[in-house]
Structure formats: structure tokens, C-alpha cells
Length: 184
Image 1 (cartoon, helix red, strand yellow):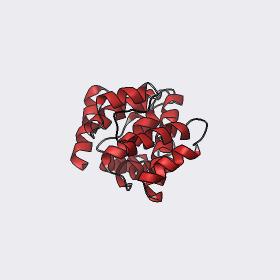
Image 2 (cartoon, one colour):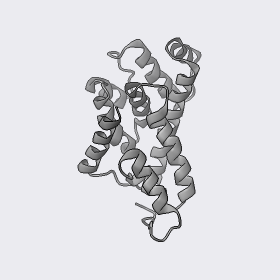
Image 3 (tube, rainbow, N blue to C red):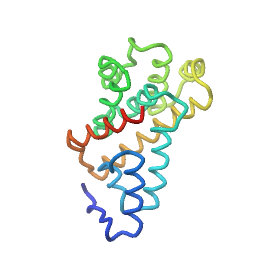
Image 4 (cartoon, rainbow, N blue to C red):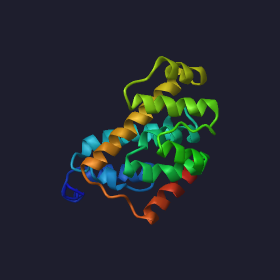
């Protein structure tokens, strides 16, 4: 980590924010700890993260698909969400296709629309065809949730990379998967 570790005993309000994050996710990730020098900013950013991870109008499989598409090329986010996507029912072959920059042909049409939309959204912009394909399968709220999820996780991954946040151990990643199972 490029920043010094945020000391929750010395930074006012940080222990409380970490407790809120622990209650909503089961643990405080290294990426969240990387934002600990700004407790109120972390609180607000974590609230958006809680929304896109647990409170959207999308089933878990589609949430994780949206997140995974945004995580492509972002090691921290990919390490966390590739396994969560498989756990949510996304085939391993589709995860591999997304990692290689391909829209997985094996996914149902609606899920391919998500993959194409997110890839374009995070690239040069969304074409009319990709927007129409997404709109054919999802409500305006769901489309907004897909876009918000992708944007949040891409930004989160960029901050983690900028601060040199270390990926958690396999044991901690398992805690996250177990927490997710308990919420499903």
C-alpha cells in the first residue's frame, strides 16, 4: 500500500465507519481500508457500494455479471468478483471470455446485452445498438443499476490500483464468498 495504513484509533470516526462496513459486508477489505484517511468519504462511497452490491433491482447473477464486466483488467476487482460470479451461476467459460475481452456467446441474450453494454460504456461509449439491446431486456431502473454497478467497480478498482492496495489472502476472499452466500 502506497499510503500509510489508516489507524482507526487515531483518525476520528474511522472505527465507526469500519464497523458499518463490517456489518454490511462481513469484513473490511484492503481497498476500503485504502480509503480510510477520509472517513466521511469512505462512509459515503461504501454506501454506494452497498447499494450496487446488495440493493439494486437485479438478481445476484446479473449484479455479479455487471461487476465482473467492469472488473476486466482491474486485478483487485477481478480477483474478488470472478469467483463470486461463478458462485452466482455465471459459467467459468463465460468468466474466461469476459477476461479475454469477449462477450460470452454461451450466455443468454439478456446477459450478453449486459456484457456488451458494460464493455462499450467503459470504452469509447455506448452504441445505439448496445443501448437498444439492453433496453429490450431491462427496465430503466435496471439499466441504471447496471451502469452504476459498472461505474462504481471500475472507479473502485482504479483507486485500489493507484494506492497499491494488496489483494487479500485466499482465506479472506473465502470469507467474502461465504458472506455473499449468506445474503443470497
